[in-house]
Image (cartoon, rainbow, N blue to C red; front, top):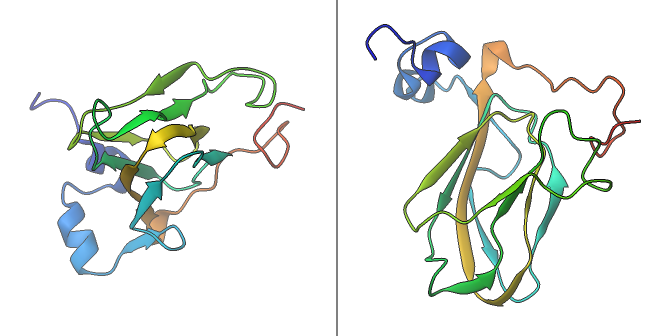
Amino acid sequence: DRDQPTISENLFSTNSLEKLFLEDQLHWSSREPAVNIYTNGGEFLAHKDAQSLTILLSITCPETSFEGGGTAFWSQDARGHRVEEPGIILKPKMGTAILFGGCVTHAGVAISSGIRGVLVASFSCSSDRKDCQTEQRDIYGDSM
């Protein structure tokens, strides 16, 4: 493990996200960090965050707090979320975080009952912000 670079070294060229945060060097997605609350029928349509890193932290228990739901992900080579079903839907335990690159297409799947809560934070280093590659894809991230 010592020979492997950390996520922060790979994405932000530093081993200290805390230092970047304290020096106001992180660029956050609009209205984030935030807590997303989903109620009956609540969903978040498929999208890409266009940041270096996205963190989703489950703050409710999928076994007891809600039915349905989860976070859906499509593979990078998928033809698009309107054409293909997601490759995987994750419903992590309360307190478990999912980390992924901001160019990954994902969605908050509708819940059928209860309340689902997710802390979400998408960010890049202010000096190294990179946009998602959009070649051959429409505004929804679908292949053209």
